[in-house]
Image (cartoon, rainbow, N blue to C red; front, side, top):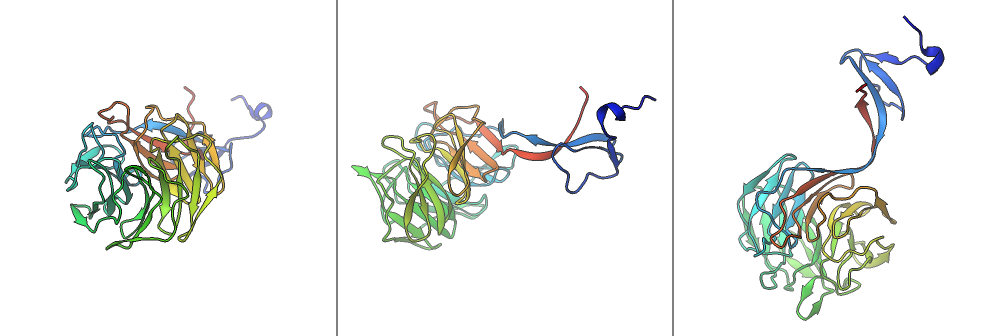
Length: 317
């Protein structure tokens, strides 16, 4: 047998199980699985997921994670009450909203979600999802649509949005039973904005008119203007994450990540360009679904995986 170690510099490590803490570029042979493996950098990317059963755009409600999500409302092109859940592979129809609506705000998980505001006419209706059915609960104090929102089912925040004849700055807090109008107001009257976070620590960004790069941080009491988006987003971009680790996608071709201080453009774009879409998940594992165009909405779903070092099988073909 020819020895290559003099040419290549070192032997390949033979192990019975993958190293617990490999280093970037490390290669080994796993004698248990009979596979050659390495610890490699994988770039961020969007990949196709299972299509929605009901194509929808015009800002459908969204909640959950990449592998356990909920989509509800939106329009195709008339407002819809259709609701469905995602298991990481496919969507399954679930009981519908009580009030069909588009341009609504939402938050929560696949089994514990909240939808509020929206438009067939401007609405203040709020509905709560328990994993089996939607229940109408106490309404927002102010009718509005194309508003921002984040939080959980029992502790949510609603802000800005539109109610003729202008954009709103009102902020309301939800305690699981009722909405309370807060003294603090959003820095500008905007619609079609989005955000991520919890009731006491979140980020609001984008909006119209015109499409803006504005980003504002919420500490539970006041909004503070912080570093701007790299691309203006005025058609309700998708969003996922927390106040210190977020992601925004759609409305433009660019994806951007937020680190708590500033936005960075991620070199990975949605395959289906769209605005007014649904989005949920985390900064590194996000889900995008629905959106416009077309006017009837799209059924397209895409899954985002952030850049990371991962163990991969090395093949020679």
